[in-house]
Length: 248
Image (cartoon, rainbow, N blue to C red; front, side, top):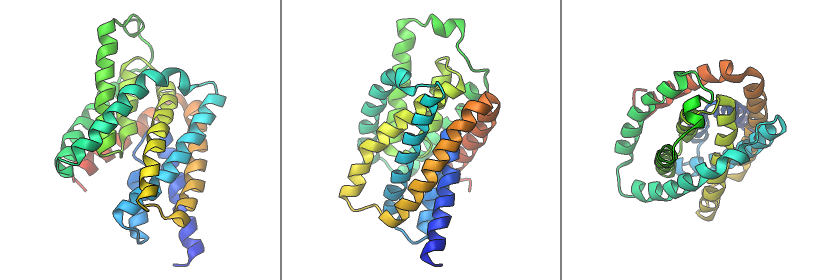
């Protein structure tokens, strides 16, 4: 396979993954194996993929903002516990077998279907949330951060489910999600670069594909609304749960 063909395949894979990541999550299930298939070691594939993911979240965050869905407004109370949790998750992952961690969260992913299947949107209860509700939301986002720090793949699905539970519609939840994941990825990328775990020629192809996917995904999310996002979410959750439970 020549270099041009390889570059185009990776860009196309990034495009598809970028759309999936923006609408739901789990797009890296496509691109990381693709990078490994192209000959990269798993750790380098993971680091290279993060470059594309970073640009996808940057582009989709800006697009959501232009469309009137500003993720910055709702991200602050989510970012703090998620970032703290990600540090804890990285520490836990270094001591706990990855397979056990994956199985636990694979089962938890099935539970994500409950808030996703429910009719989303701010309810009277969520508008009048007591301080305790905010406290438990913080605990939930802390747990999501732990998962993100340990595993990363599919963390957007947990974020959307938690944000939907707090009363946000799925479009606004996505706008906040891409911003939060963008920040987490920005923090992680220098580590991969420092350990020389980024293949820059492959990353350049992913950046183009992921960025375009982020743009198209955000546009589709705004125009298609929950009627488009919900079925994509359900498929993504089931696919991610099956993968983490080693069903395929």
